Image (tube, rainbow, N blue to C red; front, side, top):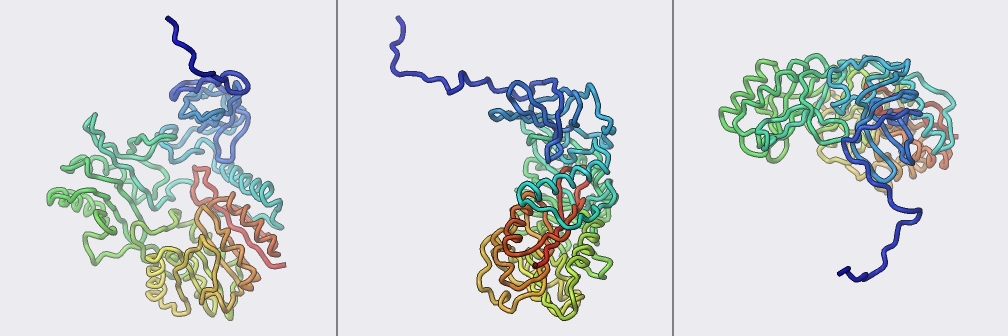
Length: 450
């Protein structure tokens, strides 16, 4: 006997809903153009495909990583017809590791892609173009990364420890025995790290590992259970062999095993040494960082009698070089521990014309004591969310010159709209190639009051 019909069923408007594409499916595609993040774009049967590792004009076989409605994310598995721009990927892990998504493009083409991304955002969102485009700030395309986080996970089913970097488009871990973008001092540590970690007695209690190369080399291990004496001996022997500091992160803040050891990095052009602790923000590309600081000082043109504001100051990466050139620097940061560290860095470098304050810079600038006297110039280096609430009040501070360092062209363009509304002109802009082999764009913009 048939079941009685208890209600009406309606088809979605436009007919039946298309079946979702399963993860892992392979599809032959023709790539039409590149997206702003460097992925190839293809169109097939009403869907838009974003394909990692593909270039405009190519015919490729792509494997589905995920699908959401009419959007499919995929990665290149085979190239049937290659673009003239394509080069052999320099890294053996290309296509599997998710770290370097555009290494199949020559470096000059990577720079051109990033330049187009910045120009497109400023034009489309803010409706402006700088009066002058600056040449890209760039350095070596490999061997530049002085800090890296290595994923570590115990696979209970396979009973093995996975050590490496996250795969493209998933949480899988790709085993890494070499990474061409790491600075040379970290390369041997990276290659020997998996074997050392596999010797530890409680692999299921291990978290990530951080590597850092600055004024010293450091290895930080995150662990969720106390380490045995034998495990600690293995870790110390490994670090001693590589002449590296050992830091441990259990409960509380990361700590060095030897409390007398210090970690940091130098800004050689200004003869500055900045202390750093794992967990603090620090630019991963030392060479481009120095070039960025030098360009920011050149564009801001600080004068000896001026009072300058540095927003999102971090460890003092900009504030300390600025302090060598002006009467006073007021530096503001949202994280209290970073404020304390920046103040210590100023004192240790014998800079006494700096004042550091903690404030929530995601909120509008209030009548803070540090803002009342006004400023001749402002430098800001916000996170990816930008600085919309801050820039809404910048004109009231009296600043005639403003340098904005951005790690997200979309929020830079959004904030540019507000700065133009306040009467600032976009005088100059350019990209900072902080992360070669990736589509990540950093930029610098100079605004001047009309």
